[in-house]
Image: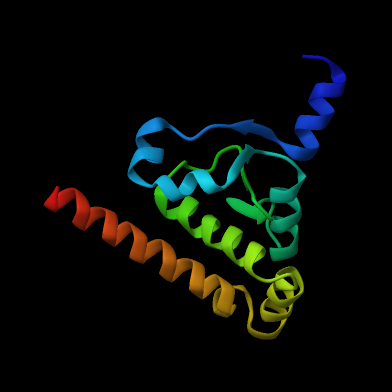
Length: 131
């Protein structure tokens, strides 16, 4: 790997595919693109006063921290942010406003993403029990 590739990976992370069994159980996760590492997870962390966040979504791309677990809870949460990005042109500004006004944990978009993830995981659990 050359110096140019290392610089690009440091800035935008490295793309990867979901494990087939995860994509089969949660097919909607294939709507997003995934990258490990990169500047976005660090910038998100700095905004929250920490070194890095576990994940951050920019439009259709989910950036995961190098050490973030690849689990459905986190990925479904981030997928909801993909939906929010694609559904509202002004989403980034509204998201920042919500965070400034109410804080990260009470941001309406974060609450929505947590609910979406929990509901979808619950639905998948019921499907696996009945199927």
